[in-house]
Image 1: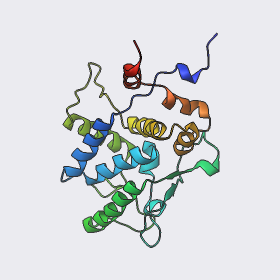
Image 2: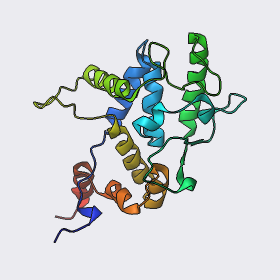
Image 3: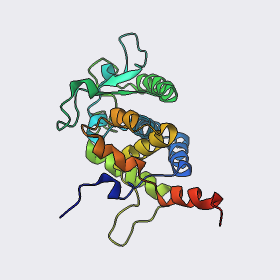
Image 4: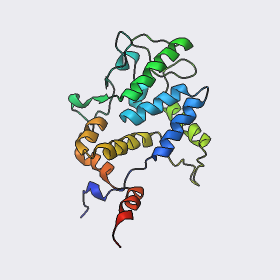
Length: 211
């Protein structure tokens, strides 16, 4: 008989703090990396999925006065989660600062900043696609020196940023309900994977054992 025990699941693949900082630094410092820098900061700070990020319009993130909202209300989200009260995410202050700077950059680039214009555009000034989001992430992984495995895969995918957000939030709060609400899981069972200790956690935990 199969056991439906979330605690038996392996901890999700996440980036270390050093890897997160390196990704954010390399995109921030690159002359063509600002858009992707903000996208990755958004994913790490909110846990939004690829299609949710792609669907964002200016008015979803900014008020009519151009101020960054404290929380983003989603018009597009995973339909299996049918609780309308959970269809928003809270925005860290450090991310709000980056988003404010990004809006000024969009305006300087001549990109549309009307309420219903896309928040993130491709190089052709069209709404960025999920495919482009994944492709660009792979390119940045290569620039970071991550080689593909024998089956052609990178060690991290764009979705790893969502997992990393959940893990970071759990480690900061140890409150599974906080993680559930930010990631908008309909069932807390889905959230418990972030409370599963990783190999890194276990190695750190046993160091002070009396032996």
